[in-house]
Length: 229
Image (cartoon, rainbow, N blue to C red):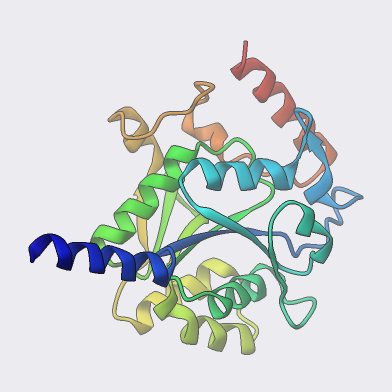
């Protein structure tokens, strides 16, 4: 009887879908890059492909969130119904479109992040049940990658509607609405303890290099080439 019950439970869980999905945020205007940042190539791949690859390596099914329907060739796209609402609009659209309990959000401009960081944040969020889980480097909390519980959606929508200044402040408000702080895990400590590994051996301080402008792209390319020698 125990075996039958377990089998039925596993079948029901599989039918319900994954408990977490990964979303690449790609709704920005790419004004500093001068062209569609998601399609700029780094190491032979578009930045959006790098971001999707990081999430897939962390064991997640992936989608793209934001005003980027032309990115459907890379992954299914969840479009924000209103343009110009930035990454918070994409986050809310993604959470509203999924039945998964958690969503992992990653912008397309962090190509040097290790998948192990995403996987660790997600595991921590699953164990603790916390509303929002992010990492920090050099003592500063990083907005992304972020693991967000779907229970935070109503508060995030409220922040979006009132014109919240940014995603991290919206995360703080959403977590507070559920009587929690934003959970912040120090990336350097996790790396030093062996919980995180970067395939190219890059130190944690370089993982969060934002590729927003051509000069950033050159720096990321140099770090990428050095990491694969």
